[in-house]
Amino acid sequence: MSIYGFSPETIAARVGTEVDSAYSSLGVPIYMTNNFVFEDAAQGAARCRSPEYGDLYTRISNPTNNELGKAIAALEGGEAGLAFSTGMAAISTLLLTLLKAGDHVLCDDTTYSATAWLLRELLPKFGVESAFLDFTNLDAVRAAMKPNTRLMIFETPCNPTMKIIDIAAISAIARERGAVTMADSTFATPFLTRPIEHGADIVMHSSTKYICGHGDAMGGLLVGPKSLMEPIHGDGLKNLGGTASPFNSFLMLRGLKTLALRMERHCASAMAVARYLDAHPKVARVYYPGLPSHPQHETAKRQMKAFGGLLTFELKGGLEAGVALMNSLKLCALAVSLGEANTLASHPASMTHWYVPKEAREASGITDGLVRFSTGLENIEEIIADLEQGLAGV
Ligand SMILES: *Cc1c(COP(=O)(O)O)cnc(C)c1O
Image (cartoon, rainbow, N blue to C red):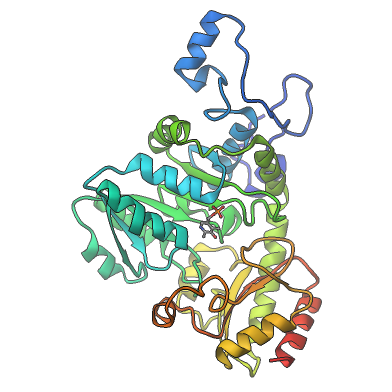
């Protein structure tokens, strides 16, 4: 029975349960093998011509990885999905496959640092130029489009201000001008936003985060139309080699089964934390798309089912207050990344963004007192109690 067409919760609960013809196991087997044996010369010849005739070599195709690709495609409502070793392997493979010298890329100005590096540092070496601007300013986006703009990239929500990009509006501009859109939907997951329904061409996930959900495996995913995914698979992934480990794909499939439930808890708890911090005298500002004070709260209500597990907030006491809070938290772990069972807190000014000059840092919203908070699955009263005692130490 095909899982396509069911609700996302049902698809997620059933992913990877149709695969094993050898032993009829209900769970997806982990095919930790590099090679697949041919029955005869004709079968070998066919498989060497196309993966549609069967698996050949795991870098190109592997049953466990393929199940994950199918699962994420079903969840996002796209034609084809592919699994990669990390989120950055997914993005770099997409860029290096779809772009050629002379092409132009438009990217929202609030983007993951490694994505920005690929566009700013790597692609110009190959004759591809990029421009960064605020995608919430639709007139500026229209004005920045060039005849050779081939790709438009954005994240929603994005770090650190949890800015929300209007996927339908950006996708409409792209379509009108013949450009392809890639939405990095890592923070949203298919349970909060399904970008393809809003007009995006390709959805990307760092499955390292919520999809894995347990902080124990890295991965990346792309979903899109066959016309784009076939070259990304058959040319890009095959030859660049950023293939997922089948073991990690098994962990991602396992993560997908509980993603709907986990997202409900992450979102409900983040909302409670946001309200608590918003009323705290030592907090200057809370960035959370679920608060009516958030600049894109209306867009978020339109395209998100709930507002995510991640938030940032600014302490009135600046750098010193940020460091003091880090040293006072007991339950919340001090760590980067997001989307895990543990609540994770970090202080970008003294940690991840230490090397960025203060002015450039502040221009991108990362002020001295900014704290990043990935709300975990612990009891919400205990998370807030830890913040309460932590803030008392500031
Ligand atoms: C983590 C992350 C990435 C990169 O993913 P990796 O799995 O670490 O390579 C890309 N985009 C966003 C929004 C992320 O949070």
